[in-house]
Image 1: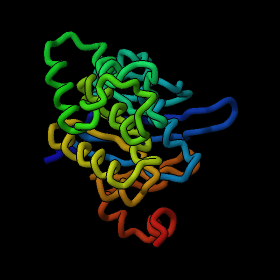
Image 2: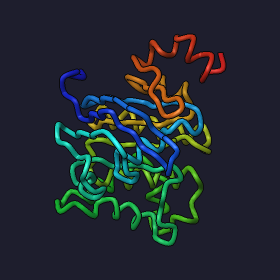
Image 3: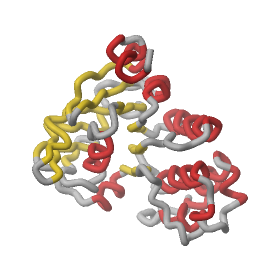
Length: 240
């Protein structure tokens, strides 16, 4: 049961620019512990920029970001990872000349506990092909396998909040299904998930709540199942 008082991420009046171009304007967004929240919008709407701002991979001009009631607006990206924020970037960002297992272990670089082997085995259980290919270079894998490595690497940091940027992009439907099954399982294990997804129907079907971004502004948000039936969403994003 999601407690609407138990906020994990709170973004207030956030704005971002690239030079003189406004990418995000006056963004207000809340995510509660245990939710899957999706962000949908057309290409160029600012979706990836928002994820990058949460991870401190993109500087912001105005606004504040709170994580578990702590103001992290001025914290560097490594400190945000240490607090429990992990991102799977668009394009995956793997080290292609390292092995699968080496890439996965890099996700745990901030950890000092002795549970890393257990977590590695969990990832291999969820994505068995990665165990078969653990000594292969990441650059030799298929796109779907690389996405599995990227998700697994993020999980190795033991995130409280997992940010996923276009997890289905360019992947075969069977691989997408495997990845989204893991996403749902992570939610049941207590991980909060924020997904940017071009496949609006998949995003709405998977998430608890959805925000709609247009031209750098949030224009709509609400219960995902209700938005599935919203004529504005059907017309603009679902092709119905």
